[in-house]
Length: 118
Image (cartoon, rainbow, N blue to C red):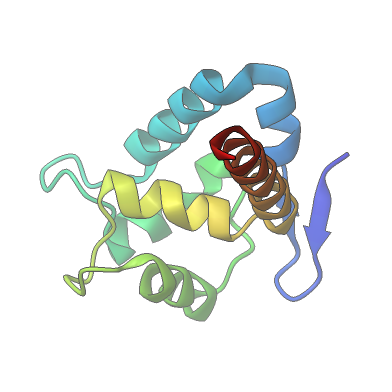
């Protein structure tokens, strides 16, 4: 079931998508989402392209401040835009359930690797 982030009303569908599509399918869908939101001339998501295209992903209720916060949170290189990698990382960061599952899988793999080492 999709989780809802109470602070912004954002429904977290990434865990559902991950379960349904698998890892490769989820990455493909994230790439499709990036392509929908990006400025086609610049090849990155700008504030203007995010605002213009956000309704395509069900984000029409987010305020300009919410959109600016998303851009700021995801903009690791400080260029004022989101490239494809920054967008994918941001989507995972905005998904607490998926982040928790990722952390669990990482810890499980690490423990297994450590056991194999000894």
